[in-house]
Amino acid sequence: MARLIRMDHTGHTELAQWTADDPAAVEAAVEAFRRELDRGYFAMVSTGEGHAEQVHELPVDAGLVIMRLPISGG
Amino acid sequence: MSCRWTPVWSSCGCLSRVAEGAAAATPPPPAHVLPETAAVYWRPRMDVARLRRAAAAWTATTFAHVVPFVGVGLLLFALEPLAFPVTIIAFAHAWLIPELYAQRGANVVRKRPTRAPQRAEATALGLLGDLVGHEARDLYTRTGLVIERGRLGVWLVGETGALLVRGGLGGGGRVHCFCVRVNQPDLPSADRTSHLLLALRADEQGFATVANHSFSGARWRVRRRLRRPMRPALDAAGRAARARTVISQS
Image (cartoon, rainbow over all chains, first blue to last red; front, side):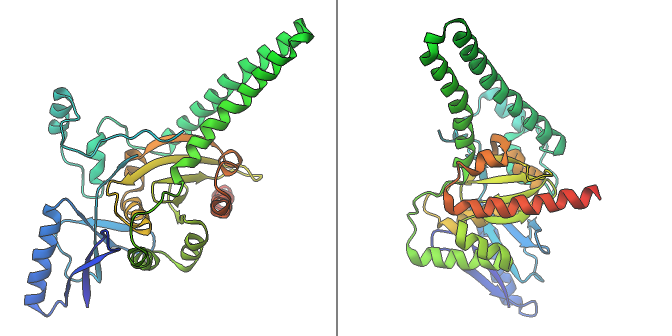
């Protein structure tokens, strides 16, 4: 079961769960994904140890998609 | 001494019209480049050569502060031994100013009081634990810093900044201190670290470009300004960086 989560004040919030063979769940996950992008979040997917990639479309085959906020110099 | 806040990620009119025009004219970054770098378009992308230049500049700055004060102190004492109080004051300046710079560097990973409830912290810690391996998780639990090996060096990521440790043989090594954070005050501490960690993993050079370079100096200088519980993390990063140096030179 793949998960879409957003890092927020609660630690993290699970926004959607889906499996690739469940079109309705995928649809709901895509909607949630786009909503978070519109709110200014960036979507990240781990691509191996020590590597991550920003994605602009929901990768349906990914196990975990994490929404993060922008960073800036402090 | 704390890091200066640079409100770069904002559309609140902080930029001048000229800067806004230049930003608008800048093409969007390629997919693998951290999107936040667009907000600091005037900064050249950080790389090894720029890190070396920054390190040399910080060393020169330290000498420029130490040598004149020591020289004046010695000269005064040679001319008039009774002026030794002035000599002591000059020596104190020569010691204090570099220490303040090192303190500024160490402050980038200083732990801030959290507003998040305990439960949120535990949840965030679980996610961070999923992102890193056993070694990094254990180190984070003990020190509050996540160790991450990159191409520029070995990183220690905290909630409001990161230390980049670059190798040096014979127990040396240099630390670059970067002030960088996510601007959401109510996030749990571990979540702040996870934000920085994911950005670092996506684009290490972009991460170092977005971050404010607060200080660069010898590892021992930063180590003694760090809070005691954090020092083992810097020691571990130093060992990892030294091992990389040995491997790359053999």
